Image (cartoon, rainbow, N blue to C red; front, side, top):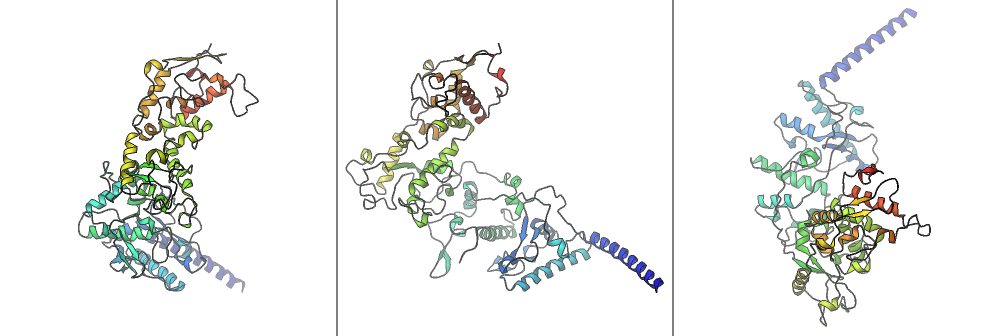
Length: 533
C-alpha cells in the first residue's frame, strides 16, 4: 500500500511538471502578452471594455483593450473594421459583433466566443496572438499608461473640412425633428455637435464620443475606400499628443460664414426691447462688443457660446433661469476664473508672461471689478441714445461698430524725456550698494512686449496705465510718489497687510521677474542687483 502511494505521488509530480511545460510551450506558441510590448510607453488606444455595466455590477474587473494593436493585426490580414463591427444603416456599429444589446449572458458569451476563437485561430496559424483565459483578460491592475488627449473641431480643421466638402454643411450638421423623428438640416442654424451630443447617451441622441467616432471615422473610411485623401481612422492619429502636433494647421483661416455680426451690443434681456428694459437710461447696461475681433482671438465659437449659439441673455437672464443653470447674466459676464466669462477670459490673458509682471502686483491692491474699470466696457445709455428707445437690429449693430471705432487704443506711454532714464534705489542700502534701475529701458521693453496685444491697448486707456504695474497703489500721474511714502522702514505693525520697504522692493521685483520668466538677475544672487560694499 505504501509502495502504491509512493508511485502515485511520483506520477503526480511527473504529470505536474509535464503540464507546466506544456502550458509554458502553449503560452509561448500563442504569444500571450500580459502587457504591451513597451509598457513604459503611453498609448492613446487604450479602451476599457465594460459594456456589461449596463446590466448591473461587474463580476470581474473590466478588460483593458488595445484597439490600434488589433486594427493593425487585422490590416495585415487584408481585412477591415467589419471583422469586429457590423453595418448599421450604411454605418459601422460601435458595438462589438452586434447592433444592439440583448441579454447579459448573450453579450458575455458573444465576447468570450468571438475573442477566444479569434485568438485560437491566430495562434494555430503560427502568429502572435492574445489571451484565452479569464485572468489574462480580466485583471485588477494594468501596467499600460494612457497618453489619450481629447481633440476638437477648431477653426483650422473646420475650414479644411468645409473646403473638402465644397461647403456642403448638411454633410455634418443636422437637427432632430421631435414630431417626425428624423434628422434634418437647418440652414443658417449650424452649431457645434456638442450642443446636442453630451458626455453620456440621452434619449434620441448618442454621446459626443459615439457620434464623432461613428460619423467622422466612418466618413474617413469611405473616402479611403475610394482612394481619396481622408482624415485619420486610428486612435493615436487623433488622440496622441505627438500625432496631434503633426496635424496641418491653416494659419490664415477665412472668416466662418454664418451671418454673424461684426459688432453688437451685449444687452441685459433676451430681445433687447423697451418692454424688457423699460428704463434703458437708468443704468450703464449697454456694452458695445467687437464680435468680429473676438472671432479672431479664439479657435472655436464654443469659447463663448458654450451651450448654444444664441445670445448670452437667452439663457442667462437678469434674475437667473433654469436654462442658464440659474447663473445670472452679471455672473456669467464677470465670473473670475471662468474661461466663458468676459472678465475671466481677460484675467487669463493677464497671466501671459508679457502681462503677468504688472498684473501680479496689481491684483493685490486693485479689484478687477472696481467702479473705475466698469467704464471700459459699459456705456451710459444716456450718452449714446439720448431720449430714444433702446436700439434694435440692425441699427444697434451700426451704432455699436461706430462706438467701438471711436474708442481708439492707447499705443504709447509718456514721452521719453518725461521718463527718468535711471533710478537709484538706495533707501535700504546697508551691506550692499544701491540698486541702479534702468528705468526707461524697463518701461520701453514693457511697452514693446504688449504693442501687438489688442486687449492691453484697449484697456490701457491712459498713458500712465503702464506705470501702475510698479506704482500699483498710486494714481495715474507723470510723477508718482516714492515707494517709501507707503512702505515704511521698518515694517509698520499697524498695517499688517502692508510689507516693509525692503520686503516691498524684493517682493515687487522678484515676483515680476518670476512671472515674466526673466532669468537675470537671479533671485537667489543678491549681487545680481546689488553691488556688495
